[in-house]
Image (cartoon, rainbow, N blue to C red; front, side):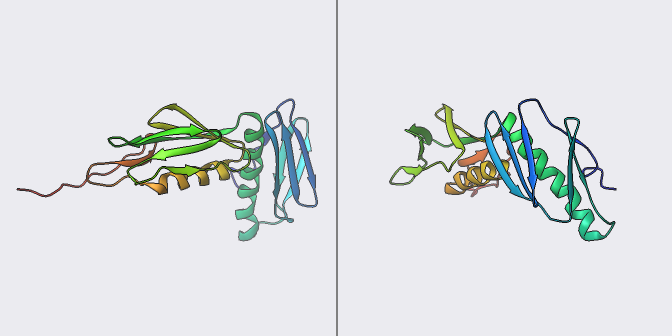
Length: 177
């Protein structure tokens, strides 16, 4: 039995959970998320707990078991607490600011780079060199953070660029005289 798949998902107060024809909908204080799950997986709700069960022990069902449970757990966490990714901007003159809802990055190009947030995603800039991407969908938050990082990834010689908070950039030795 999958250790991840067999763990029950606690359903906090104020969160509604509906499963119709392999489409799971979770409503909470921060919003609503919908996800299609594999038809073979059985999703059961009872006593403030969600349980995911698999029909057989085949390799396909075993792999879908943990995946389905994790997707549903991330939806529940997203509508209650939300997710966030922090990015650090390193470099002389590199900075970020908000223009309305959009994020404006000055990262060494001849022009500022403007990024519009997708639905259910918000940007924050607590400092000029820190960007926080917040949202209720873990996958979308990660994709937006990766898109921002790809604008100017950290380079290995001086370490300049946009990196995830806490990310280690392996440095290379430059030219020697």
